[in-house]
Length: 205
Ligand code: ATP
Ligand code: MG
Image (cartoon, rainbow, N blue to C red; front, top):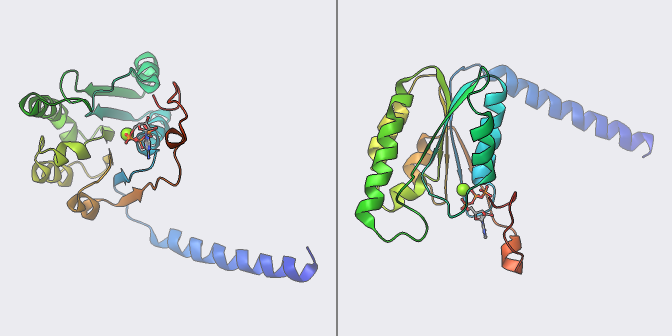
C-alpha cells in the first residue's frame, strides 16, 4: 500500500475507534440480559451453549433447560454430564425426558411434559445466585400452546436483576423480541443437508 492509502486507512480506523469508545463510555448500566437467538439457520443452540461454556468458565452457576427431547443423544449432553458441577461453577440441567419430540402427536402428554419442566425451573428465576439460564427450543412451546407466553414473560420480567437468560428456537414471538435486550436472527444462507450431506456426530448432535 502506498503512504497515502495507509494514512487514509489509519484515519478511518481512528474515527471508528472514537465511535466505539464513545459507545463504551455510554454503556454504564449493569444488569443481566435477555438474549433471543432465532431464525431458520443453523447455530442457535450451539451459540447458546458457547455462552454457557463462557459463563461456566468464569465459575458462574448456570442452568440448561432443554424443551425438545432429541432423537439422538447429543455430545454437549455427554460433555456437561462429565464436567458440570465439578468445579466452583455448577450446571444444572433439565430435560423433557418424556414428551415432545419432532415425531410426537400427543398434545396432552406433550403439554404436561412441557409444564413439568417449566415448573421445575421456576425456582431458578428467583435465585440471584443463578447467573445464566438457557431455555433451549422454548419457542416451540409457545407455538404449540404447551406453555403460556404471558406467564413466561411475567417470570422473565421479575427475575433477579443480574440474571442472564438465553432463549433459542425458530419463530420467536414478537412479545419476546420486544422484551429481549439482544436478538440475533440466524439466516440459512446454505445448509449441507440440502446438498445431500449426511448429518454427523459432533456437528449436528
Ligand atoms: P444447532 O444445534 O446446530 O446450533 P440450531 O439450534 O440452530 O442448530 P435447530 O432448529 O434447533 O437448529 O435444529 C437442530 C438440527 O437441525 C441441527 O442438527 C442442525 O444442523 C439442523 N438444522 C438447523 N438449521 C437447518 C437448516 N436450515 N436446514 C437443515 N437443517 C438444519
Ligand atoms: Mg436448536
